Length: 171
Image 1: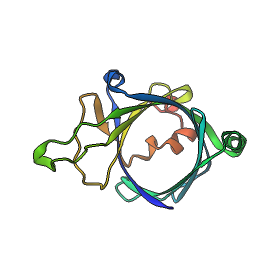
Image 2: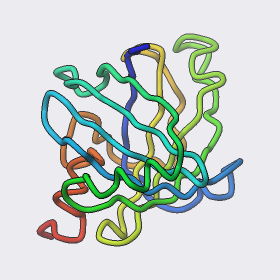
Image 3: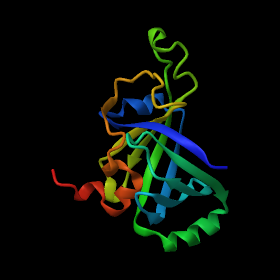
Image 4: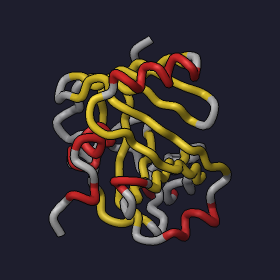
């Protein structure tokens, strides 16, 4: 089933999030297709693997159609040979989100998590946090380790980082 992924993305200022993380996973992913209208990703997360198809992002970059299916890890390994550009290597930390303040929607943000990606290899030094929301306008609490928002800035899309690694960006 195709769903709509709605998320906001931020740079991370420091590593205080690590003390709050309830789990972490090693992710390796590549892109069979990387374009504005369509992205096809192969991901191996620890011992599980997934094939994901994403459509064009909304104008503000907060949402886009997404289809994902678990596939055998050995098949994902073979599909990596079809990937264009570099391979993304990162550690993902899962950090429970605090509920938004009462005046901004009460229980908004409750049950949400921050997915904080610490990149390795050619993207070493980049740390990005995402929170998936029910709607683009949903309120959520911003932890102190959160930096500037980069939602909609295509330079920070993993598919772009595969072809234009963070380490190659001008200072």
